[in-house]
Length: 329
Image (cartoon, rainbow, N blue to C red; front, top):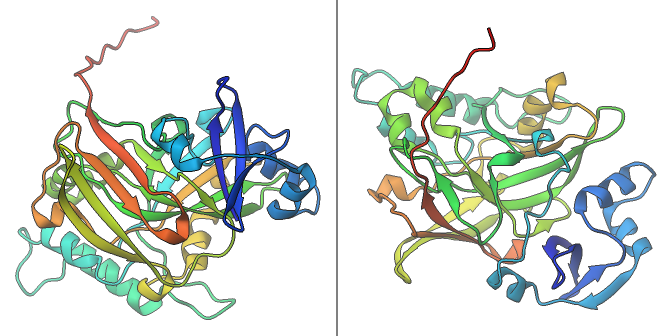
């Protein structure tokens, strides 16, 4: 089952579900957030609550995407209560690019911090059931204000040194009234980052992640497939500039999803009732690693058939904004 959010022809919000090859409006529901809240307030699953609400007219979700009417597959009434975070060095092969980026200041025989972290994941990222594995690299990206809708531009600030895609899978969570994270499902994500800034110094990683992102267009309700094999590409002027397969799922990762979830939600800060979390699980495929430097109006495209519609976003370079601080004293 897949869920989407969109605006109808009158400009009103709506939710639709895809199942058995058909996409239909969920009756009387204007947000996936409300749908999920209704489910967790009782004992229903998302599938059960959708069935209880009933289904209306069929919709053409590909047309909605083309018309720019798709929303992110979940949002929050207060964007400050949607948290976008992520983890890196989680996929087999993901260390190579990062290692190369930070190798110049290390003796040839000394492992970079990236390679050390990657090896820790290989050795302890998939613990036995009931055990705690090694914690991964973790980073904060922002809140709901940084999320670009599917099909809409991803803004890159004027001060950025790079505007690079990161094709990933994101877990989508809602915290229930008791502070327990409830997983709604998974979505494609473009964890957009500034790799040139990161390359200057590893300690700039935090700066490089404070960028916009996009996820969706569809929320895949259910467990994550063990093997995910999609395509990441960049189009320039309508032509494919670069493309490469990306792999995900636990068969291609050095950590289990459960281990990554534990090391995010072990913090009480991230278990506040009503909050939404979009947690990106990392990638091993970057156009930056192949020497690609994107430009304004380049289009990122991330697709994997198990997740429905592709995630497409053009790049927009924002104008410089002066920072003006005024005192209240």
